[in-house]
Image (cartoon, rainbow, N blue to C red; front, side, top):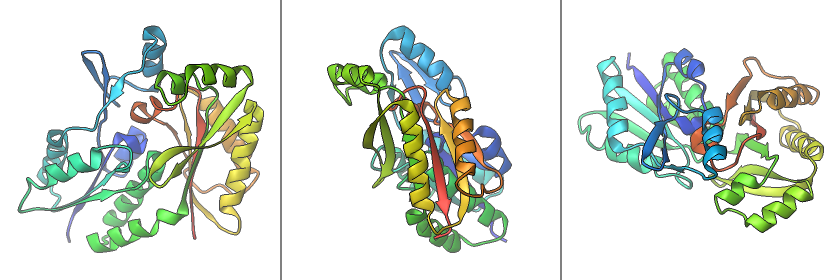
Length: 284
């Protein structure tokens, strides 16, 4: 039977223990502070990231893993006995990761490697990797797995709330003056994944109202549907994520194995600390 390895990048927000459980290889996102590079999942996480940001009063830069990083991951998978690889990448609308993985795959001229643009990020991408890994371990072929992944697009929902615009202002995504007014007026942005990008959906007043709005959005996207998978995401706010999970449990039956995960530095640097949100996969 063909052995298919599943590989993804750390913008999938998959916790290491979950990746290990499903035997998913993670290619890490580099974080650059000045002339020093930190590797997501190895020597930097969300907590360390924002301690450094607050100390330096500046944001780092991020970049896609190099083709060489993907070459190493592909070769390691083949060395472990895989004869095919599915590599699921962060949305090409927000990163060059897909291009980097594609370049790496072209160097394996005698091997079958499918590099997939997830058109998602965070656990919306991570769920695709998990489902691919489950199917691969159950004996499904590559074409069947790819068809299933293609079917997931309209059934995945991502929403989050930001407690402050401070970090968006540091990154130039909003003006510092506007961010200052917004924080003074207690305005909280609501984010969503739209057309492969993390977009500002709307703004609401107060953190309480922001959490209530997340619940309304969860109710809307699950109306008449069954929730197959749920992930709670956060940036340095596990308590807030847990509270959000408790509130979602009042709306619908939670699936087994709800994942709680950090956003991870490659993504959280673009939002800021304190974020909470959810990723939902429905049955239709």
